Amino acid sequence: MSHIIIITILSLGVLALLAAIILYFIAQKFKVYEDPRIDEIQAILPGANCGGCGFAGCRAFAEALVRAESFDGLNCPPGGADVMAEAARLLGKEAPEVDPLVAVLKCNGRPEYRPLTSFYDGVPDCRIAHSLYLGETDCSYGCLGKGDCVRACPFDAMYMNSETGLPEIIDDKCVACGNCVKACPRNLIELRKKARKDRKIYVACSNCDRGGPARRACRVACIACMKCVKVCKFDAITVENYLAYIDSFKCTLCRKCVAECPTGSILEFNFPPRKPAAEVTSQTIKVNPEV
Image 1 (tube, rainbow, N blue to C red):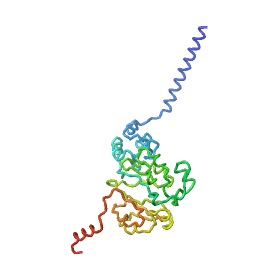
Image 2 (cartoon, one colour):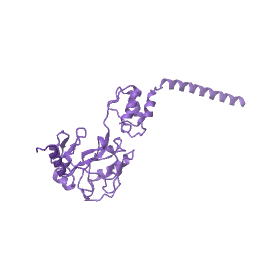
Image 3 (tube, rainbow, N blue to C red):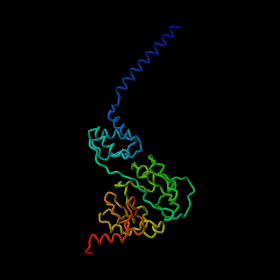
Image 4 (cartoon, rainbow, N blue to C red):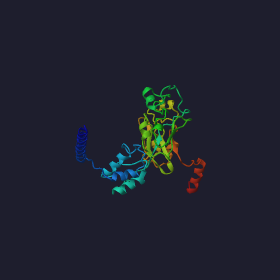
């Protein structure tokens, strides 16, 4: 009886040894080589896995950096220029300069500007609400206010303002990962060039209706009057589909369009207070005494 047990044990041992040898050769045959620099690059990335780079996580982005011939079109929004410069140094490549971006909401439909005409009693989700009906106001382009963008932000850079019913973006926390842009079913959030001192000028409206219907739906809607286009000397403003748009890369932040807009749909942020007209006139006289 004992010899049967010994034979069984020896047989199983031989089978295990043969299986191990076969698995070893299979592993060597199909072994995938991984560049050790991928680990080095991943170590310097922020580890947010936000997808702002366009890849499925920091590991995938690190692999793309190592394999890429150049860094053109590659950027880590949370890490910014410092992280990209360090990655370029480790890989012996050059990192092109990329202008920092910040998210803005292209809607200013506060309750005092855009009154409610109906009530939504359903799942508090923008995508669901957008698929079911036009919204709680007469503006079918405006913010639905259900907070999809806030929930999509992995950096706590957004919150819902209880007074306005609109999302607020915290510039200091926003890394321009683009998650909020993807989350909005009405394409109301845009990544724009981040200017010095966080100054911003943009059209806070997305209504593509003609002037009359747009203004009836919201008092601060763009009516495509073209006044902003005429006053801009830098060709930074265009009007398409009855809606004005300011190119943040061409805009010099002169603020002339803001003062010219008759509906107040162009907003300005983080600028010093404007000087009264009388004060400006007196200064002009001092500078040009002959006038």
